[in-house]
Image (cartoon, rainbow, N blue to C red; front, side, top):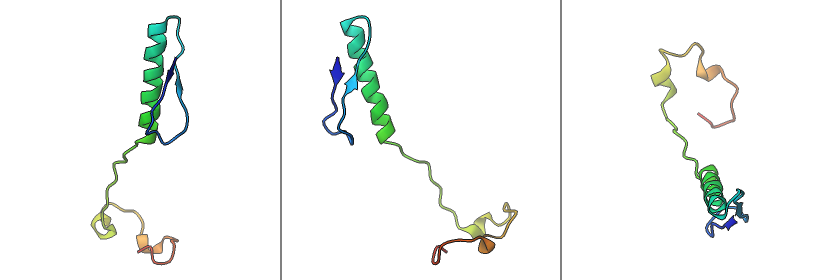
Length: 71
């Protein structure tokens, strides 16, 4: 059994493997869902100025080696 996602970021199909046809269909869909989640990760990013973090930091951010123009 194969499941195809036409709008996927990869050119691959999901292979359903199981003892029965129905179980193989479910397996293919579950594998396809797993791949979708792999390709659609949303990170929980926070953006905070270093000055707001000063009380909690144990180092001076200005002393870190960093690319020119990073801050």
